[in-house]
Image (cartoon, rainbow, N blue to C red):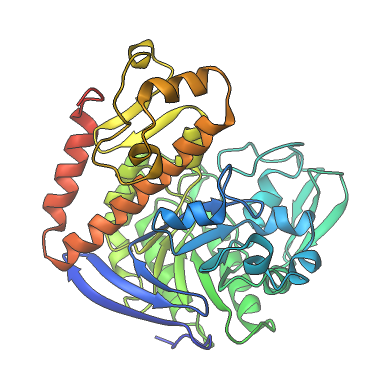
Amino acid sequence: MTAPRAEGFAFKVLAQDGHARAAEFTTPHALVPTPTFMPVGTQGSVKTLTMDEVASTGAKIVLGNTYHLWLRPGPEAVAAHGGLHGFTRWPFAMLTDSGGFQAFSLAAALGARGEKGAAPAPSNLVKRTEKGFIFRSHLDGSKHELSPEEAVRVQGLLGADIQMQLDVCPPGDAPRAQIEEAVRETTRWAKRALAAPRRGNQALFGIIQGGTHPDLRRAHAAELAALDPGFDGLALGGFSVGEPIEKMVETLAEMAHEVDPERPRYLMGVGTPFDLLAGIEHGIDMFDCVLPTRNARNGQALTRFGKVVIKQARFKDDMRPLDAKCGCHACTGGYTRSYLRHLYVAGEVLALRLFSLHNLHFYGELVAGAREAIREGRYQSYKRALEDSMRHGNADA
C-alpha cells in the first residue's frame, strides 16, 4: 500500500471489535474521532443552524458541496475569506465533495437542492467525456467544464481539510457493463487528480465504485489503494442511488472491511440510523447524509425509540420533551412536544431549527455510543439494542 502524502494528515486505529473499529484522524483544524457522522452544509450552511449549534451536536467535521459553492458564490469569493472555515465560521475539520454527482444529476433541475435521488439531467445539458463533465448551471444555464484537475483546483480554493476526487457514479440499476466502465473511468480520473497540484496540507480521498458487485468493489479498492502517490483515504461512492438497501448492506458485508485498513473508509451519502449501524459493523469510519436535517424540516424527530412525527394530533397536549434522555437543547431547554407541534403547525422556523438540532445530536450520540461500545468490545450488543429500540420503541415512552 502506498502511504498518504498530505502534510499533517494522520490516521490511527485505536480499537477493533469484529470489523467495527474506533479510530481517529488528524487534520489541520481538528482531531476527528471515528466512527463519525458529517452534517451536510451544502451551500456553506447546515440548514437552519449556526455553526456553533452544529458543533454542539458533537460534530468535528462537516461537508461542503463543491458544485453549489463553485457556481455560487464562486471559489474565489470563498478563498478571499480564508476558505470555507473563514467563510462559514466553522472551526473544525471540513470535507468537500468533488461536485461530479451534482454536475451530472442536477444540471437541468432549476432550483434543485443537490440531494441524491434527483433525476439525471437531459443529455443536451450535461455530457461526460474522457476529460470530465460538460454541463450547464441549474442557476443560469451557463456552461461549465468539470475535470479531475478542475475539481482539485476548485476544492483547493474552498480550502477544506479533505477533498474528494472526481468520479463517475452510475445509477443503482445500471447494467454491469456500465458499472465496469464507471470503474475504469474513475481510476483514470483518480490518477489525474493525484497528479494535479494541490496544497500540501489538503488531504485527497479516492472513490471506489462498483455498484452492488462485490468483486468489482474489491478489485477497484485494491487498484486505488496501490496508486502512487497515494490517497489519504478511500470512499465508497455509488451507494444510495436507487439500489435496494439490502443489496448495499450485503455488498458492504462482503468487502468493506477489506478496504485498506491503514486509511479512513468513508461511505458517501448514507444514511439512516440503521445504515450507520450496519456500516460501522462492516468497518466504515465516516458517513454523511442530508436525512437528519431534511427529516427535521418535515417535522420528524429521530430518536432512540423511533421516529416522532410532530404534526400528529396526539402530541397536541403532550408536556414532555422529545426525548427525556437526549442532551440536545431542544430536549433539555424546556421545549415540550406540545409547543414543538404548535410551532410546526404554525409554520414557525424555530420548529425546523430545534428538530435539526435534535436530529444531528441524535446522530452524534449514535456514533459516540458506537465508539465507546467498540472500545469496550460490545458493539454487537450496542447495535442490536439500539436497532430493537428504534424498531419497537414507543414515542409515548
